[in-house]
Picture 1: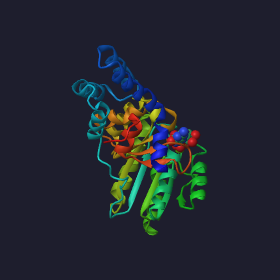
Picture 2: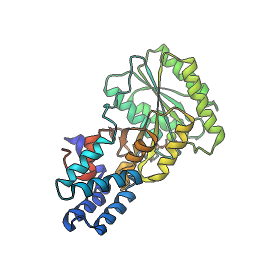
Picture 3: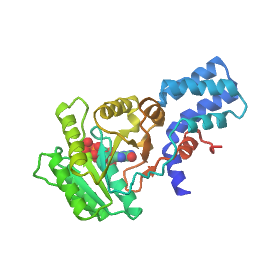
Picture 4: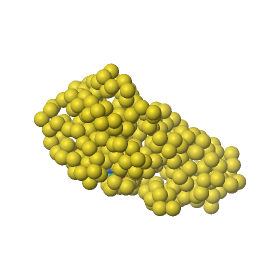
Length: 297
Ligand SMILES: Nc1nc2c(ncn2[C@@H]2O[C@H](COP(=O)(O)OP(=O)(O)OP(=O)(O)O)[C@@H](O)[C@H]2O)c(=O)[nH]1
Ligand SMILES: [Mg+2]
């Protein structure tokens, strides 16, 4: 199936090193050297220390006995169950897309709009990045291509005000899904972080009929840095999940494990390219299959 093919393809760099290390263990037998090599490879794929140690235990326990399937079963068991990207409730949803500069927020907003539109939802975009000059323009181009309504205010410096206008419009038009593009920010930008908190407050207090949902975009190639970014954002604002972007260009696709184990943040979507179709609902079997290069048992 084309869908599995693309995730499999996007994981090729990560898989190349990970499955090679498992092959070495299988061919050279389980030895201190081959285990160390495996450990190093898994760590460099950003799977996180705790997960890697647990995998080594599985390897030592099962040795040559159907090893890769045991590892696969274990990895599937420690990831959240698939929810098919279903974040829609009975109420309309306001989906905030947040994250550090350049991690793929605006592109992901467009991809999500395409996805929910394809599910038959009435989608509205809000361009609430009032900082970067070309930000709204970028989103307008996507909205045009997608033929979805967009609310913005190029004169406003206040993202909360734009959000208010956008959600009011969404309410009047009975939209199902409102996707909000926000400015990129580092957690050290105190004012910008406060402003983000204010946006959540406006949405929650003034629009109780919306289900507020929040996703952080994390650039998969940034590895451990992404983990730090996720921690800092989730310390400040509600965080329901992550969109792991740029998976197509990295060998560090293992970040999903520590993200869930250490921070409790499930990856909901994976970005595998720059186009509208390059977004996939996270599926743990499919992901492990791509990571290990074997069918999940
Ligand atoms: N290869 C690849 N490129 C991506 C992906 N997602 C986004 N990009 C590219 O990454 C760059 C930045 O994406 P944006 O969507 O503008 O990122 P942003 O977070 O909105 O950036 P700021 O608004 O400046 O903070 C663009 O060139 C995108 O085409 C992806 O999944 N794969
Ligand atoms: Mg942007």
